[in-house]
Image: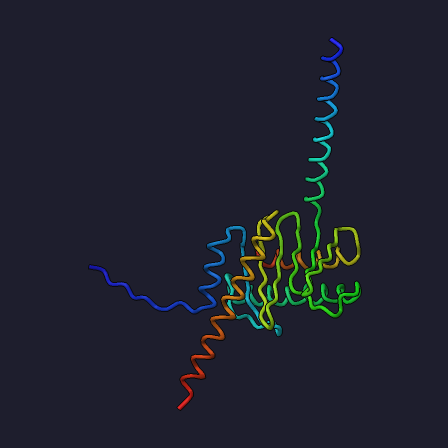
Amino acid sequence: MGCVSVRPMPTTAKALADLTEISTQIEAAVVFDREGTVVASTVDDEKAGRLASSALELLRVAAEHGTQSGSEAEELAQLDVALHDGSVFVVRDEDRLIAATTTPEPTVGLVFYDLKSCLKGLGEAGSTTSTAKKRDEKP
Amino acid sequence: MRSRSFLTGFLLAAGSAAGTVLYRRRAARRRERVELYFGDGSMVSLTEGSAEADRLLGHARELLAAART
């Protein structure tokens, strides 16, 4: 009889695994913070770092445009860039961001929904963990 | 005979109009574009050709290429 060892999967990695399983249009996804530090990704570390810095640069240039067009009061919440050979999505949720690349002509609303759900899930998991830690720290 | 040729003409006109609409829609969808969504729910759409859009499209192309290499 075989023996199987089961290790708990980290929450961020699980959230991304769920994301790529649910949304077949998403090819690669990276979760990172405002400084560009990668939290989790579906690609290797080196590529994830490059994707995170490119996404931050894209967001910075887009935010510059937003300021010029008179939307300075409101922060850029999300963006999508449709190219002939695929699309790029970036979604921000407070200090955490997610960038994803997709196949050409994806269902934009659905991809945004999945990315937001993933970020929200990570946020909730993070707050649950920190609450649990605080509770454990109490005497 | 007259009503038949009218019907043929009408069908041809309707068909070409529908074809034009479909072709234009498809062409518009195939254009590269950037859509920016702000916290207040407003959205700015930039299509290829404008300086701002081309700058953003360049960054996005780099990102897409980095993800696929």
